[in-house]
Image (cartoon, rainbow, N blue to C red; front, side, top):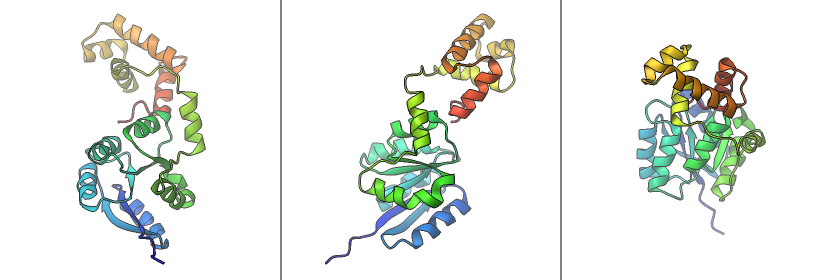
Length: 209
């Protein structure tokens, strides 16, 4: 009987310790093989073209091209690419962006010890894997209004500690327009005030990437 070929895995992460940990975990699996490592998005795309791995493990926060842009680039060239996101960040906005970009799995780095191997197998066999806590966050905010690009610009500036006047000057709009945007932001996020809005936006991942 023919022995099935191992699942070929590409690991993309800019932290050497993270890559070493994953390499160690895969070594003990007879049905898996780490075929390559990349430290940024550009390297990941180059290696994917060269190696055509079965499953790619992708960090979201990387220098240069971030994980979501890299997923989009890979999936544009290779629509059947199977990619699992690895992140320290549990915000639903980041998860939604990654899944929309074409990720098949989403794993918090704190879960790797227990979930990595089974997630690789699930995704390789055509399944999807999203941790229950992230799935519930996604469901909770599914029907919520997204912030517009302008609202995100206003919120980023506010998060930098700027007053309405400074925000207005920075974005070349009037103070009244800034106040209008803030009113809309508070309503969409269910926030009590500016500080609360910034905290919610950070928790949910609006201000990342």
